[in-house]
Image 1 (cartoon, rainbow, N blue to C red):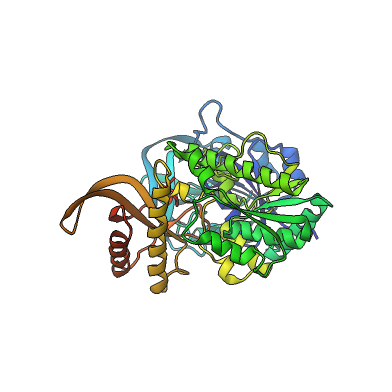
Image 2: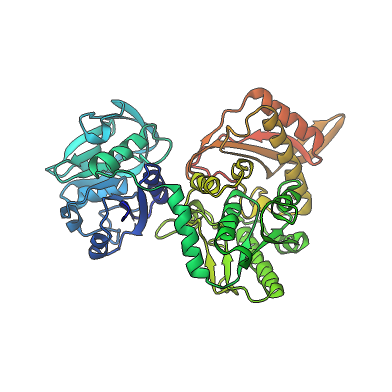
Amino acid sequence: MKKELVIVLDFGGQYNQLIARRVRECHVYCEVHPYNISIERLKALEPKGIIFTGGPNSVYAEGSPRYDKAIFELGIPVLGICYGSQLMAYLLGGSVKTAPVSEYGKTEVEVDQRSVLFSEVSQRTSCWMSHTDYVEKAPEDFLITAHTPVCPVAAMENAKKKLYAVQFHPEVMHTREGMKMLSAFVYKVCGCKGDWRMDSFVENAIAQIRGKVGSGKVLCALSGGVDSSVAAVLLAKAVGRQLTCVFVDHGLLRKNEGDEVEAVFGPAGSYDLNFIRVNAQERFYERLAGVEEPEAKRKIIGEEFIRVFEEEAKKIGTVDFLVQGTIYPDVIESGLGKSAVIKSHHNVGGLPDYVDFKEIIEPLRMLFKDEVRKAGLELGIPEKLVYRQPFPGPGLGVRIVGEVTAQKVRIVQEADAIYREELAKAGMERKLGQYFAALTNMRSVGVMGDERTYDYAVALRAVNTSDFMTAEVSELPWGVLAAVANRIVNEVKGVNRVMYDLTSKPPGTIEFE
């Protein structure tokens, strides 16, 4: 049976993959395609609905991405979001101009509850706005269904043609009732029933991997994090002893983490895997010496990763495929399609031009973090491993602002271990999306005992997120923060100040670099 499909047309916004993630949360399969996909190809895919994304351009500017307005005559429901809303208005005869007052952040929007999109939404609801242009006048055959004091067309629709548009972003967690709106579009407008489940993803992924690999040998980049662990077990179920997992200890792991990874996947672990541990700390430290720019550090770490894997591959003989635990947020933040590059990831944008493997396999590339966890549980991986704290591929290299040195790594390892211990004592480790300690490049004067110090400041981070594309700062109890700060300044040599990061995503990122 052919599964239901909703297509997201990418016009260059940062939340494009997140829209797809939200649709899948409604149990409807969703794919992202570039805005320049031909209308013939689009029709051939037979989507139940189409969503236009946001984007950084002005629809009226020369060279801005647009689409054939014939799309609105296909009889396929269309939802325009932000730039997508403006594009719909522009193509159908409305007016789009620079707004007298830009809107950015949480905004109270008044909606018309008679609209199918808002039938289950509060009349006044908090939404995430991020726009400089706005729809000044809706097309003649459209009904305005939402507004703010400075945005006269916060939503509009032509229900007869099943065309809907919103100026705000319902896909981000900052829009309080955004999922109700997207669910209404998917189910009530598009008529979807919801036939996509994680068990089908796992089954299909295993079959695809077997077909691709055949009798070839596979090398898996295993970090011990959730993503690479799920990828490793997925590959093990698909190709068994054709798989060798290589764990590179680059000296940028959390305290004792190398030994913990080996305990799970090594000879004493419960998985039937070929396991190799490579201790390459000094090699990475040498390459990173004197490098301060974040992107440069990520590129170096990524390239060195690949070189280590190439060397290990040569030791074990012919290796045809390299497997990585790349996931959707990695891809989008590394500059998928027309989107701006936020940061490159060592397993995406940080790859060198030449890689000595036939092909790179990324079985989790289409999944967000919570979907990866669901896949892990479907594969029978223990909950303790599945719900392990996320950890970036470049490791502590992106939690140390500025140059990476062995001394700085020691500082952030010790501080992070204390932070995690205290949160576990408070019973909060499973209540938070992600939390860690980072080392800033700020040094300041302190007084410890009777002596003046001039040492580093550690920054603590804790956020709640379901998708890792957007995040809200966690409100930690003051007593917990005070206990963490007290232990760090007393137990970690080289630190005399502890700060708590209150920045959400956006405008910040979850990690520091």
